[in-house]
Length: 178
Image (cartoon, rainbow, N blue to C red; front, side):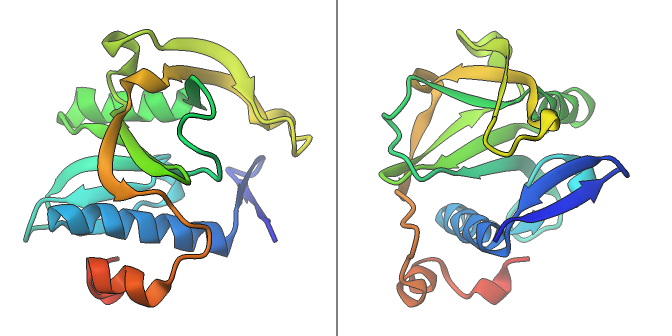
């Protein structure tokens, strides 16, 4: 069941407990490949995670995570909120901290640097969003990112129902992660 929340007294956002758990799993897997820890950011930061430098509480970079139940080659472009891009850009401008967009598709996970995406390739600002929830706040400026700008990660695709025991044996104890 999708949870609907009200943010700032007027804007809705949608997340489920299952979605948050899947997101935490893929970030745990990503950080496990680098030996780093992560912290889930409060909603007011508009990005999902801060990735910490090894053995410290110093932020190495920020991470926005998307989990999609499609293959990576299903579309030629990926769309993300222009507001997410602006927050990523501010993190770079103010603190020289990169923001990456990690997308877990069913066949593989891919990553792209988000804070400089409009100057790094053929990305465009377009109007878009989802129309499935009949929510006018879902129609907004978006960044259209060509899939050719994404890099493959060492992560396999995200299975909608992973074997949790096997997964945590691969990346370590989930209690180590925030």
